[in-house]
Image (cartoon, rainbow, N blue to C red; front, side):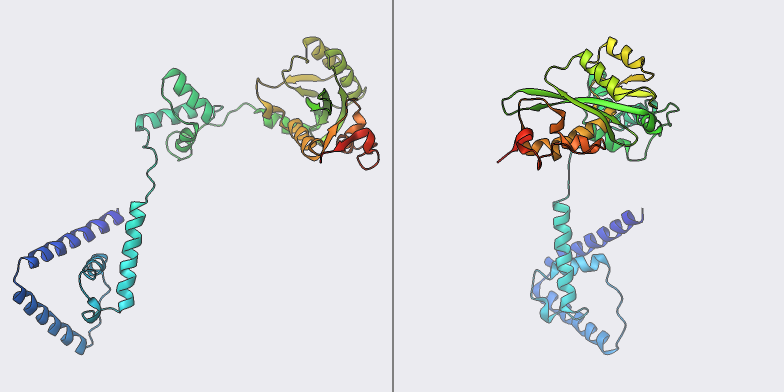
Amino acid sequence: MMAFSHAATTGRAVVADLGRFLASCLRSRAALAAENLFLRKQLALFEERNAQPHRATDSVRFVMAALGRLFNWSSALRVVKPDTLIRWQRKGFRLFWRWKSRPRGRPKLPSNLQDHIRRMAAENPIWGEARIADELRLKLGIRVSPRTVGKYLSDGRGPRRTPDPKQRWMTFVRNHAKGIVACDFFVVVTATFRVLYVFVVMEVGTRRIVHHNVTAHPTAEWTLQQFREALPGGHAYRYVIHDRDRIYSDGLDQGVQSMGVRVLRTAVRSPKANGYCERIVRTVRRECLEHMIEQARPNPARYPLLQLASGQPAIGSITEQPDQLAFPVR
């Protein structure tokens, strides 16, 4: 409010000075010369008495900087130093181009649509930006970018989301990390363009590889045998997390549950729900598989990084047996 009042006062002063300038343009040259000399005499008297000048207002700075471009002001300047007037002119130039180059962007959404977005977020705590944007497009026919939705959710206006009393997925995983194992498959292409499937079982709490194996033809029976080797009798695990790949059949899940653990399937197309195992797969690819080309024979000993992550000695590492592992990419 104070800034608006200051801008209004400055604008009125500038308009008044502009009116005086236009009025002086209608006067004769002799009258202007006489008035100029009259004002110069008063200024000389003002300097002789050593009166303390007041600080110039924004309107005075603007008018003096603008008038200084119409004539040679070096001999007429008395109130301030020449550097000060030059600084005013440069400041006005910067303000002009700042206003000229101001970001415009897209227009804001209507206020009723903004309120509707905030209300949808408050009534549906598990909905994210993309889900709200999809709901608006499918049910109301309004196309809004998820980034635009996020902008109105983070401005602090409107109703806030009430905390969900139910336990979230990642909260559950963190609370039971020591009793959860996660598994996943990833593929490796060999030098002869043969596809191998690597199966990894990891303990979420310690990020330790519990079991890993490689096969060219994965089946539900083969995968169940890997679970038997990874979860021996007397284990302390309570849950097994895997995705919804077709290899995890109902019979496989029943066999895994008979080992004393509960199977937890992740949501459809939700790799982040099994993010710990996905991170292990990414690490294996970046640190190991991107630096070698696999041969056709499937052998778990060819993956020393998985053996190190499982706490086992890296038998047949790249430096010990390069002919049995792979040949480096040149």
